[in-house]
Amino acid sequence: MSTTAIGRVLAVCVVHAELEVPAKSSKVGRTAIDKRPVPHRVPVRALGLDGDHVCDTKHHGGVHQAVYAYAEEDARRWADELGRALEPGWFGENLRLSGLPVSDAVLGARWAIGDTLLEVSAPRVPCATFQWRTGEPQWVKRFTAQADTGAYFRVLAEGTIGAGDEVRVVHTPEHGVTVRDLFTGAHPERLDALLESEPTLSDDVRMQIERHRRRRAGAVAR
Image (cartoon, rainbow, N blue to C red; front, side):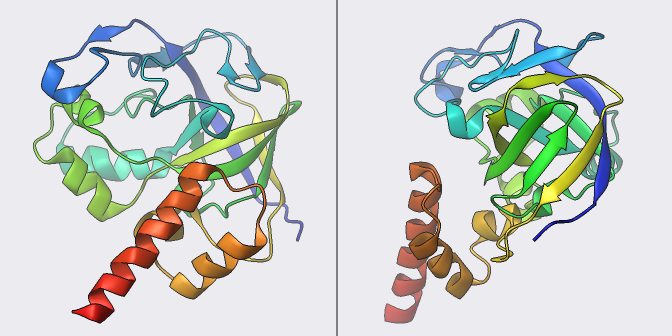
């Protein structure tokens, strides 16, 4: 299914500096979550943006987590709740976008930005390093409950992205399963169907769906 939904890139963010992380918050001891906007167009490759990287390569990065985007609308809601400004990069995102419901993007949807083509691949799962970085108590629990996760993308066509670029949703799969659905386990029958019918799902996404299946089975057994 094609669509003409349009958004805008507010900022493109890459690593500003690696940070030392307390052992209780990171097995690696370092993080590249400190991302900040850059004024120039940034090349986008299969493994992410030029000038960006991850430290914990076991749990982050790779082709299915090449680009992370967060919605300005979700960031503003959090800013109101936390009583502080949340500038682009605060969530560790590469792209701060406006005008599109990023956390409700359909898995497999294709978004064209400049000459780059991205495909929605997964929700962001909060971790202890993210909580440490924010300095907010119970952040993982709160972020999980809200489920405004933002979205990871794989890169289908390499190109460049810059602030001000238009974002066009050029294809949306018929299955309708969203990033939020996958994160929360909503619509289990659709998640099960997706697992059976979509060959491009990453191993991490398949494991997420299997975890939801096990939780449902456990709830029924009780």
